[in-house]
Length: 311
Length: 284
Image (cartoon, rainbow over all chains, first blue to last red; front, side, top):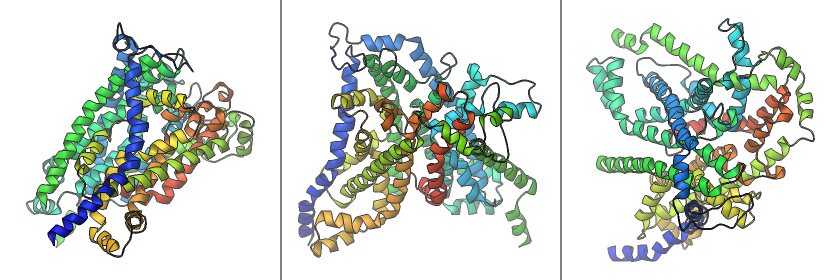
């Protein structure tokens, strides 16, 4: 009987390959080939709109990579990326954790949780390009809704030129990121808390633990994997940040909100269309991101192992 | 009994504070979009006089007229975005389900290798290979062709991952065996038996794929240089151009038009969207 079954499986195995073909072809054509092509371009002199000829730099293959790593704007863009990410992530994770604690508390039953979840998550689904243009209009100078509000509340006497200040523009970018993502993070964390066995909470309640103790001794340690996962995916998302700083103020003033992806775009698709240099910068960014994805991969494997153990 | 009742009710001051924070956050979510919607009905003069108003005005049509004969063409952008989003979503949902089916329903040698591979490439964002992709598309004359944004959606590793997790939990393999005994072909079994069972997961993945594609700015802004093929997010950048510098009402109206379909989708399907995130594995 067993033999017949394994024979059956053997004859069907080919369908595993057949049904994977479209995915594999799409990967080879639209992902692997462009990736290798980008790597190759990094070692060439490719530049100029509409120019498809290029030469491999045989004498000095690392020229583009050196040029990128020496470019002050590239260093600044990497620095900005991390600064903007930190400015958004710390408040984001703090608020998300706080809301998670409130929304999953067994003592303070909050009404309208469903409504709050829908509203908090809403900004995440709206086109970030439109959101950024909307905010640049909201923070308009000399007339704009935010300035009007500040003046009418008596916080300021005159309008403030937000987009002229590096610090202010950075905070606005970080705020938009925060505002678009804290709802998502909260939903992920809540689903994590709901995955923790209720028995532990009941036992803690019987033992007379208060809300604070339950949060720090039970919820937080059990969320460790999900928290790390959130941190790393957010970091990878932050490293490819483009839409918001680009559409808000085009990386200005004085490149205070220029991100790594914007640097790549500006090198390759503006002014002298230096594809080769953009490709080199892409590869450097790729390596940074691959490093962080390796961490995520490791975490997911660990989670898979845990699940198997539980079974 | 009394004691338990007290406990459930919690601390009223803390509760009031929680509601206060939640209401402030809710207002923060709504206020920018409210200002946008109201100002899209107000004239530039009104917006300049007073940037925030509670009630809509009567200049919606005047603001519409500003767009006439200009490069910001909301109808065209809407259509292009719709073509790309529907096409890409169909590709992602169908082929990701098919690939997940290959991973779940069959025992093949490279199955685990394939799954490991999907986990590895899931996190790599498209931005880092954009230059190679652009050069490739340029050489085969596919820039300014919406297919260049639709066909790559066949490859969606995170969607495959999501589908696989769902399929393991909800597709009984015995059902496939009985279909085989009844003489059904493998492809038929997938389309007629596995797919209907996967409908909830396909719907969830479909929503996220649609929204993600609709919102995409980076690839379209590289590939689409002709005005007729531009999608909504690419057109948004035109609103910041010189023509609209002085037309505040029109800017707000343009923004409203770009995000209106998303609000419709969101409020019609928010229940599924929120549940979809809770299921995990879906990244915006």
